Amino acid sequence: MRLTIRLAIIGCAGAAAAGFAATPAQAATQGPATSTALAAPVTPVSVTATTHTANGGTGSTSAARHSLTPTDRAFLVKAHQSNLAEIAAGRVAMAKSHNPTVRQIAQRLILDHSRLDADVRALAAKYSVRLPSAPSARQRHDLATVARRSGPAFDRAWLSLQKKGHQQTLALIRRELGCGHAPAVQVAARTAKPVVVMHLAMVVAALHHR
Image (tube, rainbow, N blue to C red; front, side, top):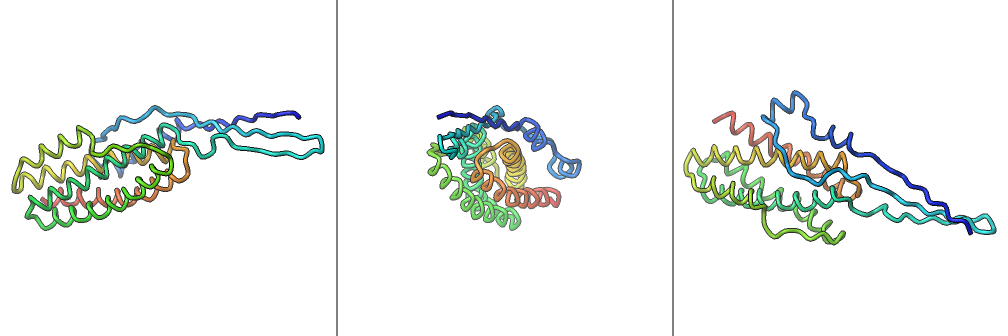
């Protein structure tokens, strides 16, 4: 029996860079770029073993076809924390704001990010990825800072925070779409993208009309 190993190496650095690059139209809409600390790009390696038997038959196995790269895992963890942060922010706005537009956006954030997070949690369970139970320390600090304000000052600060957070989430999604490996995780990223884009557009419009 002769064993032949074929390595398929898929580069992702170029795709990741393209994912982070904003078009002039995006730059005009989204404002200054923000960055999110992510895992370094990892090149997925698929190992396929083909066996040749005496009668000429072959058999093959894929050793890493459905595994997660650190980019996939980082997406699940950070997307979960972003969902938790947006849900918490929505609840704070519902408790403190009297502005109809802000309250409408807050209700939308709670609804949509709860739905998106259900998908993320299901994937994390499938791939045995441990998720944090709360937003990041920075996300909690930023929301607490905004929550100390009241009236129109709260509304402005809250909308600005949502703009920043959704820009960061879009960068995370583009990173996964450009450099991720697991098909199911990429489907989740593609599903989340138009929702996050819609939220960002609502927030930017509210800021411009204040």
